[in-house]
Length: 233
Image (cartoon, rainbow, N blue to C red; front, top):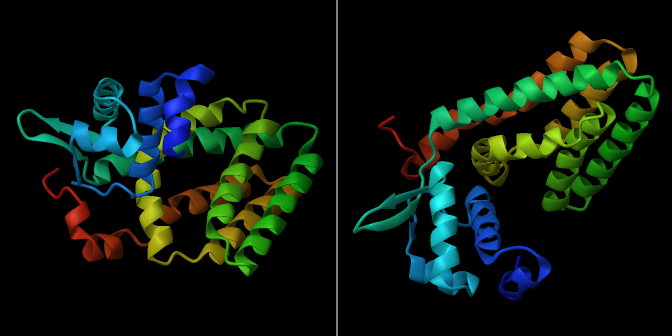
């Protein structure tokens, strides 16, 4: 979201505080705003071309969610990475997505779901071939959303998105640090294969392995970027 769109959001029914909240959250999750980075109201207001009041409201909301720490007399900072946040976020996502997958596999349109998922994996291969990492990540999200859609509970993905944001910060480091996206695509294929076979337990196991990929580089990333982590928890 650029500065002009932020400034005009209020005319589209979106409050400036909400626009500021969404933009800051996205930048924190994408590591454009790094852990422990200082966030003064003035600097953020200038960055987003907004007044201090909506920025202040956005920072308070982000603090409540654990993405910002507001320190009286010292200003605000981006919250550090915490393993406890990752584990909680991961637990919630696993519980919901595995349930969605099992529910989706009970429906009569399983063949249609398989075809839709396979098409998404084909797109992912194309994105890897042209080196379009961002489109691949968007397709990854679509893959999971399709499962929720065929489970008849697409709205659950919004809940998952809210709870997994902490996990997404770790995931972003993995991707930027060199995660093998081809392996991610292969894991998607394994999920689809199990769904096609009608083996719900195998499909759930493949999905869990896929969702827990965030832990693959965790120790190495912690070693590489110790300044991002809160080691006092």
